[in-house]
Every structure is written in C-alpha cells, then in structure tokens.
Length: 91
Picture (cartoon, rainbow, N blue to C red):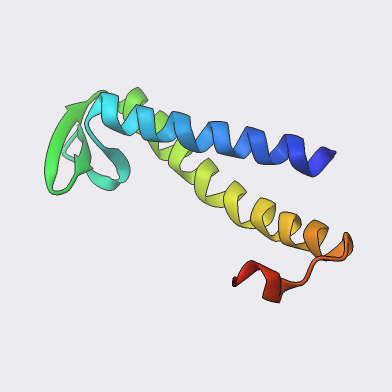
C-alpha cells in the first residue's frame, strides 16, 4: 500500500516537472547561471529567469531524479515478492 502511494506521488511530481519545464521554457539542469543571470534551457533555447525560479527548478529536477530510481526498484521488489517473475515483464 505504501509503495502504491509513493508511486502516485512520484508520478505526480514528474508530471508537475514536465508542466513546469513546458510553462517556464526549460529546466535548470540544462540551463546555466552566468554573471548574475540565470537561464533555463530547452533544446539549446535559453529563457532568462530570476535566481529564485532557477533554484526552484534545479531543486525540483533533482527531486525527480532522486525519487524515481528507488520507487522503481521498490515496485520491482514488491512485484517479485508477490510471486511475479522478472521474465514476465519482458513479454
């Protein structure tokens, strides 16, 4: 039950990240900070934003990258504990 709730939370966080990137014009991981100016990037297109927005986007991207792998692993372990086979997932 806990893993199911975590999956929904991580999925919602990822969807919000995608909406944020679309709405603001990119993400901070691909962007850059230079000379007091902060830019979000999307396919080499830069959008200047405030420092606060840049830091928020950076932290949000980091939270997505940190939470997806453990929840994915926990979901696979849960599947295996319920008697599923990893080979079943390949079909």
